[in-house]
Image (cartoon, rainbow, N blue to C red):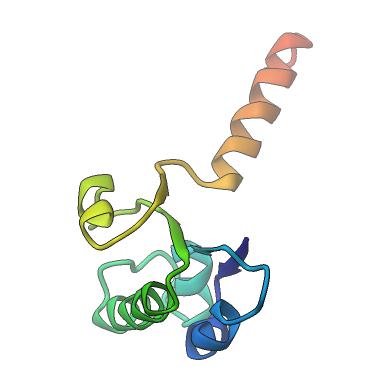
Length: 109
């Protein structure tokens, strides 16, 4: 599994998808928007165009596509666009929540 989390990765998504042994490409929308200088603006037309280009490259290569559902999108809409794997929570949120739970278990939360 490779992640598409930068505008460079979007521009090279076709090449990345062509790598033998790569079965899944996972879209990281928050990191992608950050590299575009529009952090968190997942409804921005520039972001939507970049995401569309990456999605097309992945599906054209016949690879599985994964991603994170963010503001302006839904798990259902992503499935309709061909996503095979969708998560509703980011890695940073999972880490934050785990750290909070750990601190609470130590009586520090």
